[in-house]
Length: 289
Ligand SMILES: C[S@@+](CC[C@H](N)C(=O)[O-])C[C@H]1O[C@@H](n2cnc3c(N)ncnc32)[C@H](O)[C@@H]1O
Image (cartoon, rainbow, N blue to C red; front, side):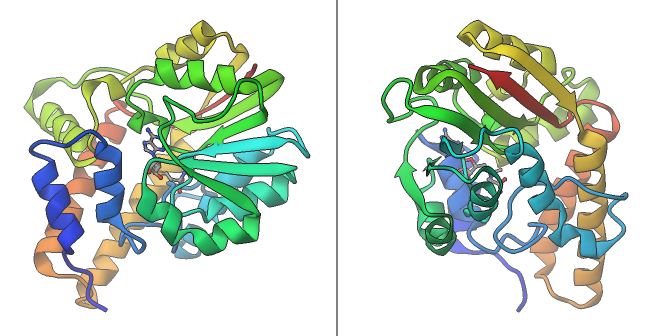
């Protein structure tokens, strides 16, 4: 099948001029269930890679490995919340690793909760449509909270951490990954790459936060033992290399509409610039409530 534009893509493009109240939902409605740049069907994270991204077979393993690595921090047998669960491929993995008594997922994108119905059933998870900064759960009801590659979308990390603290029991574990910004862009090329990535992903300037600011935000909310690990070399670098290879193969096999391929290449080149110049990175954060 030739990858090409959908009506949701068009709505996304128009939305880029002025996103509404739930920009993340517009973005993920547009991306849909078979995002051409996804590493493997159903997954939307960048993966935790072995190697430099040149082994295409790794693309099916890396997203699962990333979630396994993060879920290993969760307490076993508890009540767990997964915030921003994408298409739910990660939820059977979380269920397998943490063996929760109850697994709840919270996602602002209703279409993803619908698309993930089978995976959610497999994980035995309860789906809730809502916002990470206004978690519709009572105080101190969770033993663990996991959020994979979603926090840069939240309207405010401060409010997310305060809400996470409120809904978790003392001693509960928070494990999350995020894309921090090490510094502001300098000059026109970096500025254009940063600005257009913010627009494409429906993000405000608030999304840009250093690793130190993200950890401080968790501490201000009350979390203890906040540990941050920078892993961009194992996540962003190999994922970009893999995606460039896939675009080359799609070009050779004429699998993509020309304009779609061009848009994908521009996007990858911009993220590449931000990564190569040390502007963005990838972090794991673990903290105790
Ligand atoms: C990059 S995707 C990651 C999805 C999934 N965790 C994965 O790694 O495959 C970001 C996810 O966060 C969700 N999201 C964004 N903003 C949100 C918010 N304010 N509250 C809850 N979920 C949100 C999106 O709908 C999407 O599912």
